[in-house]
Length: 139
Length: 88
Length: 304
Image (cartoon, rainbow over all chains, first blue to last red; front, side, top):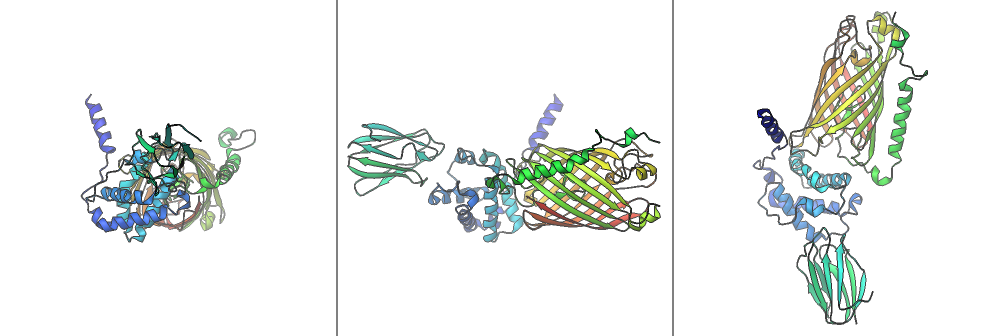
């Protein structure tokens, strides 16, 4: 019995790697203006990326941009309130593939390059976004 | 498609179930959101304007057409959603 | 005198390696004949590793749990590699191809040749005597995703098998190798710690191979499987450049020539998703009684 409790606890610890919310990531991404720039750059790419043509052809950018910005801000540890749906709920029904998810990540990397975010800071941000693959990719 | 005083239009796969409809004056369209996504329909013409609030999946928005004319129904969130309503 | 049965694995006159290369080429052709949309190279750059000496996706020495190719679980990807290692007394070359199926199964084929140069003369074989080794490998991803599972400590786990066949049967017999053919089996765990820009990999391998199999399998000192360890640590300096170090322990089965653990320190540059180049300094330990073999490793990869 004791052995089962120990194994279950170890498994829970192993699958719950923390994301260090108090590690200045929001500041290093440029705070509110930095996040807004990253989000805007990323959307510029999403709406023109041929790999994503079928994903962004029927969504109003004016609707998406404030929500996307607020979401990134919250994930980065900023003081933003995101009132939209969960990633799972808002992408359900879009049949997103891993390849298109990866294209979105690549465009986000380019967006951060253009906003002047250092490579290692980008990776810390991407580490928080990577697990969303499970919720967003349904195909 | 010509319809009676009460017709249901389904919103699904980010589209309306029909592309155009003819209605008699005073008819009501029931927009039923059977999609995975929130919609927000609107009409903007000199004779008649309408704004729904955000319409969650599983809810119905009712629009009564008292004026005659041509009324394109659109969605604020999904720009490719088109329904052309012609009222006699 | 060992019987013919032990030294030739023929099936009606064919050897498995007669099938391996054509089968792998067919698999790669199948991959390139997919519709254009699937050819969009679905994985992030530098997320496939390079090819280790036995041909599996990994570092230069260690096999990783990553599946080769830049395709996701919805498609087929592949990789070609050419490697040359110049050591104090020897040269070691490797050419191979691998295919990754749906980010689940990897198949690989590699031919390694070992040039004894003037040491060949000293060993009584003749200068420039070549040892040859064919390796056909298969790897299956069992659990996890090294890249997406950033919120978990659990690595991506894969199990692999490598069928190896050395030529030069008479010479291998003479130096005490018990068989020119052997099978390696391994379990690999790899994880990308994205927040730290660090990739770590650890592999346990059951093997009887002498110098990766180039000098046959088993020997007079030991003729049973032993558990060996290989590990890599790589730091992502920029999106395209990784610096790292590896080690790979090896059995020491032959009384004729002792061998030890191999080490390398590498720099891998990913020009694009199609081409990458790796430069490393290697220390392979003693080989064939010629002392510690250190040198330079250069590898080019073309993948999709």
